[in-house]
Amino acid sequence: MNWFLIIVTVVVAILVLLVSLYLVVNYQHPEDRNQAWIPKIVVLLGFAVAFWTILLFPLDVANQQACALNVPLSSCETTLPMTQLWYAVYIAAMAITFVAVPFSIFYYEADSDWSFPRRVLSGFLWAFGTVVVMVLLICIPYAFAGYAVYDVQGARSGLLPVSYLSDQDYPFSQCIGLFSYYNAAGNAPAVNTSLTTLGYNCNVFINRVSDQWKQRVSIIVYAMVIVATVGWVLFMVFGAIGIVMLPMDWIREFIGRPKATITRSQYIDRARDLARRAKDILALADALKREERERGRSWRWRRNAKALNAQLLVLEEEEHQLEMVYPQVRTPTYKWVLTVMSFWLKFFGGLLGLVLSVCWVLQIILYILIDPPVTPLLNSLFIKANNVFPLFGTLLFGVFAFYLQLAVVKGNFKFGLNLLLFRVHPMRPGATLMSSFLFNVGLILLATTATIQFCAAAFQLYADGTAVLDIFGNQLTSIQGLRYIYTENIFIYCFLAFVALSLAWAAVRGPDRWKRTKVEDAYMM
Picture 1 (tube, rainbow, N blue to C red):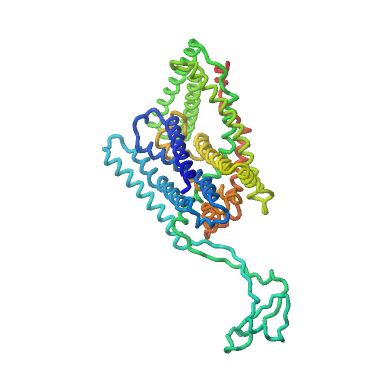
Picture 2: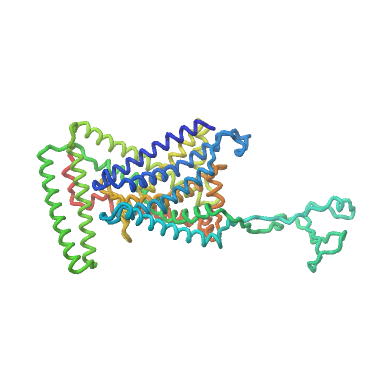
């Protein structure tokens, strides 16, 4: 075994678990602390599998490059079973999405007066129903259209038997001769009958025959196709929003950062103002409850409830800002230094993210959409980086793939907060319930399937020979009934359209804090 790859894999897997744990701890609601352990375990595994899946791609590339070029990969004794690992990761992702997440949501939201066995039974029944629906949605189309369709080019052969060439009367020519043992009526003549000459053609391209070859795929591959197609709908929204807003938000947070701490008297004054506004919001919430009991949820009630929720979000953000400029810890100076350092890290991370986002957009346009590609771009960069230092190109490739997954997570969090058409469970630091966590983890896992397929298309040249390219580059993009969506790059065009819409929205709407009445100016010292 290649122990270097194994050690790197184990270390990266542990780091991913730590990042997932940080997300859970940083975003969880105070009501869920020290409880709701089953949903927390599912959320932790969901985030970990989402990041493990994307990081399995650079591992696949490093695994493919582990053997010498003159040794076939099937005969290489230092490689990992990447095909089996890909199937295992995708089965785990689907199990978490369609079994563990539904079970945990309904277990978590069950009546608190219910006993533990009853809550488990409720979650199990909902998860079982979800599995039955997904099995029907996958197996019924698989029975009728579970084939991979490949376009092939055939050619009629002009070869003749050796005995026929001994005939001196044969008019030898450099052109391809078309021959047949069948007569014009389509019947086979008697044995030892000479060949029937159909004619000669010096244009070999005319002799090509366009055809399609169908092959039944496995049920696992077909399930991956269905899940990936649904994931593409989420990816083209989340990924596009995230690739724009991830660097932009980091840079904006740095620009709008607090410049200094405030005094105790200033803190008391602003805390009193927040308490007064919180009391007003609570009174409005009680009024809405009375109106709901008396008149129901009218359109006016929904509008007022939405406005009240927006005020609550602003109040929570200002409370966070106030705690930031007046650290209430034993060593406030140390806490303030960490705060300043975190803003500078976001600034440099935003600049790096801006470069990565621009590179991704250029890679899409110049390599994927234009046929033939204008330039391999990042593919050539990774190959040249490997020539400088072994595995350096693989690490650089991993950075681009991991950044794209971060953009998907960012887009999911951002879209949940600013959704206009229908409501998605919002993700807010320090105020996210486990039900919202579980819902969004399921969406991220679905989008991850499309992220891998997107990376396989963007880095096809560099990832040549990998197991994931065989799965996504050949089978998944050739499924009957769906292959034209991928061959015509419909999803990728939609992705770029959402990128343009996100840029326009960010330019017109501006930072979130511009909607306020300059309350944050009190924190700018």
